Image 1 (tube, rainbow, N blue to C red):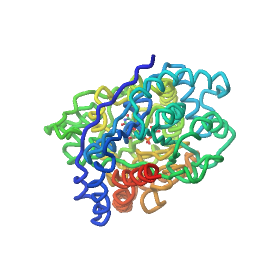
Image 2 (spheres, protein in one colour):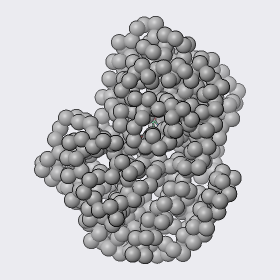
Image 3 (cartoon, helix red, strand yellow):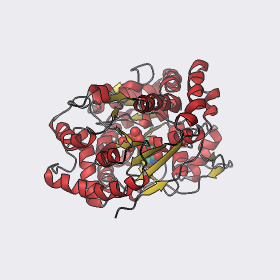
Image 4 (cartoon, helix red, strand yellow):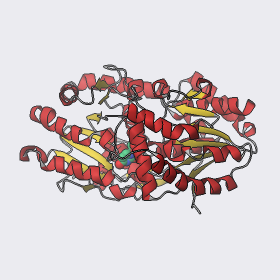
Length: 474
Ligand code: UDP
């Protein structure tokens, strides 16, 4: 028997976007919002994934589903249960879908049997909750194997793939073969960009919906400079003294105060915040290339600037479906150990507290806002929410020319794109921005405009609404 968990969802007022979006876009959004509750009357919109915290999918669900609630839609979020063996296999699938070998293991019959053996009891439990006519949105490889059972339960089933790669290789195709028999049974397949669509899926069932961020969440809400400083000090990321409260607004509108401390895996002191700060925020994952971020900084940025690098990620015990996190953090620490002594003090490996997701988000928010340059030097990336988050804060971003990052950054205008494997290109792009604060600020302003127009929740919700209404109306 699997133990499904139901994640509590808040309720956000969609009218909040009145002050943010361009008037025509807001009008289009609010017209749909006004009809949504009668349109979805009597149906539940189930979202199913494998973790309630950590990573981009959980981040988006928390916010989009709360706006759906605010619009009167009965949207629910279920997290499936899996053991370490299941997550080892699904992490491997995730890596293969990104074209990378991950732990080097195979995806053959044995793994498929084990994958199904974990999902079958989850499917059985979920089928007891789902009624005919409900909508079930299954997120990512971890839940693909639930498709058939959900169809049998009479639901409209959408499989939403959040990962992909620009040029598929054999590893990716093999992962597609592993999952395709499951996802083919879905009524629609959603990918983040056209280039990620798998070969062999029916084009008429395929939809492109890029991700989005929530402008009002603790991760992205506006913070005054003194609050940014206070949050960083309270979280132990800066040693600066402040007399302001480290306060942010929680999702339910109540005030939250940052109290938990960051642990520096390098064992060193926090960065001095009177220096330029270059930051990458991401899970401890090889595809985010923390080692390359450190090495490129040490070789090409540190010698010609007085900047400090903060490589920040979650405290590793916190993210249940990411067994490689602790290993990658150890590798980052080893990379730090091998740095020249003169550079060690300028590279900081920050493990952010995760006990309270909203507090963690407020810390990420403050760190991104305080950064002079934000980096996302991934080797593979579905979308890269961290890029949109930093752009929304009008930060100049240097990021790899891959995946959905290319949809966000117009090179030279709303950020800078580099070859993620070229450490020198990454380093010199960072240095150029550090040396040209006026140009960097201009890029930041353009970046914010782009996110406002393309990557906020209303655009995302409208696209889901159009997809679901098409499926419901046949
Ligand atoms: N994130 C976070 N705390 C951390 C590290 C990451 O809140 O310590 C968030 C980050 O801000 C972003 C999400 O996790 O919202 C990561 O999404 P992204 O699309 O960048 O990458 P993914 O983890 O989905 O591969």
